[in-house]
Amino acid sequence: MVRDFILSYARLIVRHPEALRLEEQPLDEQYDEILLYAHPDDVGKLIGKEGRMINAIKTVISGCKAKGGKNYRVNVRPID
Image 1 (cartoon, rainbow, N blue to C red):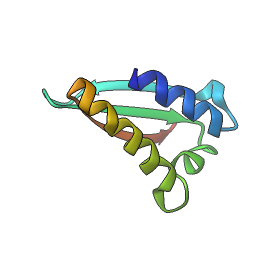
Image 2 (image 1 turned 135 degrees about the vertical axis):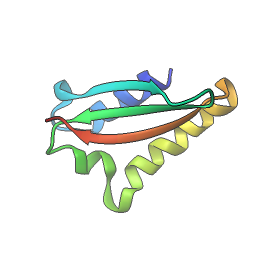
Image 3 (image 1 turned 90 degrees about the vertical axis):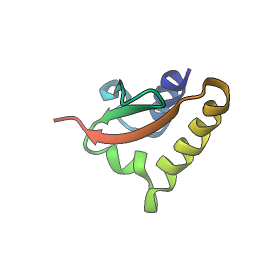
Image 4 (image 1 turned 135 degrees about the horizontal axis):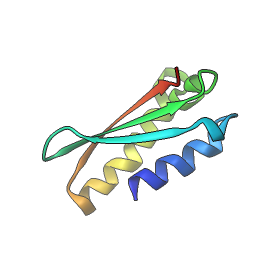
């Protein structure tokens, strides 16, 4: 659910949606890390001015905690 939301939302923002890749890694029992890989030109768009875009995504995802009980850490990285 969270994975699908992030990918669909990110595709609306970036210029190179075909380059998006998402990996989910469990950190421990309560945390999962979501790594969103994007084209280098799109990383700034996903983070947003002063981090506003990524913080908005994190806020929406935090609503999933009440339903699933997991916390998520989201990181945006450029594709090498």
